Image 1 (tube, one colour):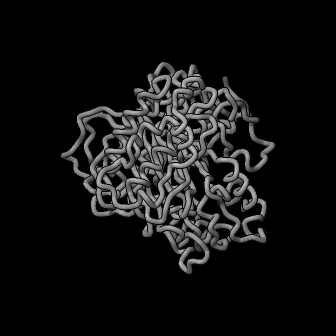
Image 2 (cartoon, rainbow, N blue to C red):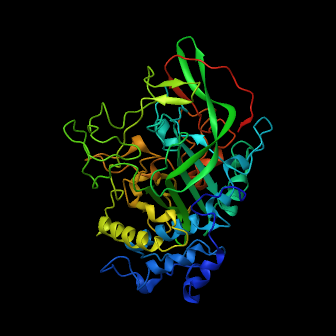
Image 3 (cartoon, helix red, strand yellow):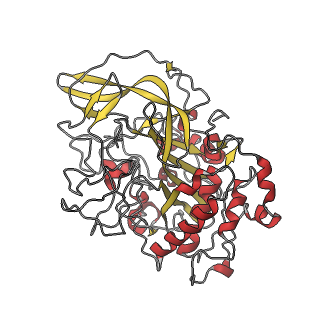
Length: 490
């Protein structure tokens, strides 16, 4: 993306403000220093004198993602890495968060029929995909982004998603695209990412005209898809029309995923805006119509019962239960949600307290960042990883690694990205690796055929432009709208 993604939060940030960082801090932004000397179990977390004060170094324009992680790193160190990577990815570069300057899926495949992109962020609606044949005996959710049904905001607009890749991550994906045949024909079937590669997956709440953003959230202008109804008889589905309009969006969630030393599976961290929804202690949530929260949140109305009829109600249903007004682009009813596991179900010694302490220290330090940084208003939910150097082909079991092998936050889900796949009490174990694995495209029933497991399949972006790509459609009650000529509506 170009420099047009400025917001009121970042616009007046001056690089001169970074000059106050002492040389030691500036050098630390190159490497988090999780070496052997710090590998003993932490007596307290965060570890290291002045750790949180060092976060400011990742605001530097030339800062790089921290990558040092020893084979004996502990839970505290992984979660500290998550906040370091979050600050690095969101650092304002000439007024634009760093991750918004990276390449996006649209850059992977040239599409002459698509509306030319502007300098603005372009978003897609988060919708539950249906890949496999209806009678296929498999888990279609296991081979797609784990984003569940559409999350409908209180104003009727859907939550949107965007994906952003660092240069080498992008280049590696492009060398292995299914659409070009490279996934199958690449002579190097273990062509894979490198240490330092990263990807960000962000979720965005579209604001209605005159609507205030969630307090302290980062906001920007974005192109959002104009949606339409496609109907056959009484069966209707909402699809993007090819038309875009410009709206203000607020950042409500973010996965920060990075390849660090000894962890080729990538370390997976997720953050949420602190006012998204009620956040429950790990492994404590269960549906109960007699329980509710008295507070109002972005995606939860005060007093909504924690019942299956009122909370986390899926929208991808047959028959359709969601209505869509093509004239306004709004859906109903709105979705009320909770974050079932506020620290991702972290099972490591002291895991939940580690995350709470790191959040408190990091948010306090972010409040001192230049220009009243929005980063102070986001919280780490948790971090997940595999055993060191296990996602390598020299390990006989590399292709079978999945969510059951996750360490740390074993129930890691973002309430705005995997809303309906969260693990309730007694069901712990759903996490990022449930969908992101070497076998992403090798399940029976996938059209047109099952593909050979490869390490690169841990990223679903190799499916861009192919029949394996996530369909962007949602069943809705009967309605209709004519196809709109692709354009950008101002």
